[in-house]
Image 1 (cartoon, rainbow, N blue to C red):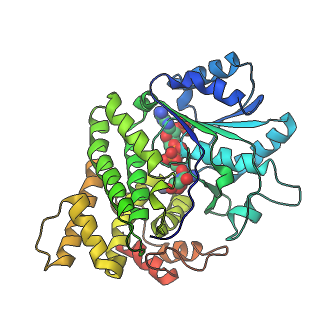
Image 2 (cartoon, protein in one colour):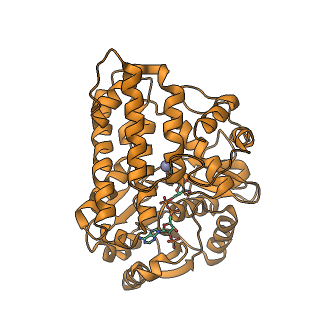
Length: 393
Ligand code: NZQ
Ligand code: ZN
């Protein structure tokens, strides 16, 4: 286990009826709120009205900015930054999923940048940066998936140039996240499944490490993976059943609040490889991960066969003779693919209607900027990334 420091100050306010607490929590940090949201699901399921009422009850002023799309666009971020400056907003509230939260994070730190700096060119496109300050941020989460409600990350798409890039900073961790699993009842089945796939991916990215003797994290990650594998099909079968929604929602937060990768180094190549897919084809992030994770596993598993055998036996209950480790690993990957299929995820590029004619282009695009390699379990270069796309055809 490596040395580590862990700090995550995001207050999680979880459960039925918790949306009424948004106003009180927000009033601890600001007076004039940018209420940032997506394409309108919150107007249909009552979340918009409930949050507005709570903010007004707390005597807060509200500036609305909707229209965030999945794979959120840089253009709206720029609009939000200008709006915050013009309206003297002092708090940003994201009401929605990962896309809304990530857009809100970009606005929150973009609004504090000096005129000489640009949110995209000086941060998202750089390998080395420090985000010094940001407007305080709160979250009302409506979909368990990205984990952005208490993560350090924000992922934004420059649609004009077909680039999707992330920043990470403790400065971007939310002050609070209100999470009522009842808000998830209105999720389309496909979005529920994409969310489950993303949560599982965050656990797998952390699981596949070359750092040894980090057993507690292994065990916690395995428990979380099994919890997703059990509860995602149940949430799809019984969409209004609170307990399954609650299990997924809490696991989604734990999977990505950095608790589970202390003392180890996660991989993250599959995420970076997926971001090219969603940048070019606007596919949902969770669906892209379902296509690519099995391909990545087949490509890199030889780096540490025993780690993959542990994953196969503890997570997927593969019970084959230890003399056939390759067979054990392939069986686990097949079970992972069967899980994706069961919840309605595509498992090949063809399933998602993505042609194979831009694999080299996407692989090269992944290195635009200052990246030297992708991943840590095995360092990947352009040729490797192209081969992984090819394995996913
Ligand atoms: O826009 P609206 O109308 O709200 O509809 C959304 C959207 O169409 C809908 N939705 C959300 N909650 C709903 C609902 N529909 C009905 N009822 C509800 N309660 O779901 C659709 C998808 O929303 P989105 O926010 O895009 O989903 P998700 O949370 O999966 O976020 C995906 C984004 O997060 C990034 C991804 O790359 C992607 O851009 N990620 C962010 C991370 C981070 N910041 O730490 C880490 C992740 O690995 C990920 O990369
Ligand atoms: Zn993800």
